[in-house]
Length: 253
Image (cartoon, rainbow, N blue to C red; front, side, top):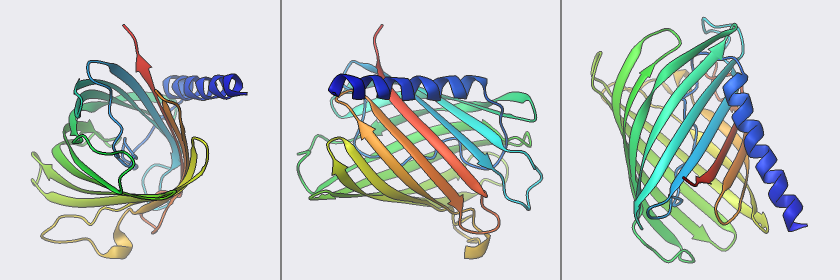
């Protein structure tokens, strides 16, 4: 039975990868829609992660077609408590494929008792992204990681701050969070919420924010993680629907 489960997880991962390479893309949803927790690449080891999102932009937007966005990441554990990674962003829509930029990132998660009730860390990254409208954004993102674990329940908070280095050099608060419950074995079900309040000095009115909520199903092995999510924008400016798939496996050179 365990062998069949492992084979099923491998099939899911390669399905994600194939879809990410061959499907078409657009502009709106962030290239990374993921709650960062305590999982990092083991010391001196590499991991590969693929994330794809198929979504329908808001009705009020300029793009009418569905969009597929992809993110590919290679990470290396540089200590028992930190990893560095590089990411490539691509997208496709209307039979056109684009390379939209990428980012470099560092995550620090202090060693802790995994059976304890709390852990923390921080992720810092530098992004260079070309949107589907060809607008170029360069920004630093700082993401605190706050995790709480009680019995079969887990809550993680990511109150991110984005500091833009070009354009109008705005600073944006983009909090996100997740609450999940372990079902059985290595499976869990959860809810994720992503928000963006706009420039800190002049916050965007709540009903004009591209907030989104997701129902997510997660599973993992000792070395790999997989996640499937279905989401929707909360307001009219948000995406009409989103399906996201994330898979991470170890890399052996």
